[in-house]
Image (cartoon, rainbow, N blue to C red):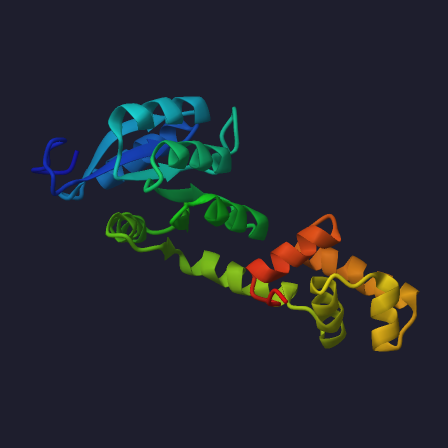
Length: 216
């Protein structure tokens, strides 16, 4: 624990460290215990162990590796937030893929930083989320911006998407826009790909979630 800190000290931020590599856990603990206001109250090397330890120690903040041997970190977030809706989870990962970032934040993570982040940033992230804020490292924020930019539909795709929200079928969209049904099908296919969904219903829901369209 941090110098001069105590596990029973109410001013300290209690941490659970979850990573399947013992060396990484040891490194994180060594980094964290140097801070007087941070105390590591538990650690785990798997998803199942993480859930058990979380229930036992009830940490203020959980530092969670995204890829664990027995389950995905996103699944762990869902389970512990079901146990404790206000749980603060920071993903500490080697990956900054768009899908990983979005899935983690949608599951309820309030922070996402990379393992190669400087020690002061990791500590800053812990303090930020413990105080009720969200913390996303600059590299991760950049990927999120890039992801939204890639999703943004063209003018014609936007028109098709808005008509999809109205519940229009392909032939109706074609008639309203003065294009062939084949062209509409192509636009719909591209829209599904951009949004990363499987069908029109999911496309409409995802587009509304991203703020690309509004419900009619």
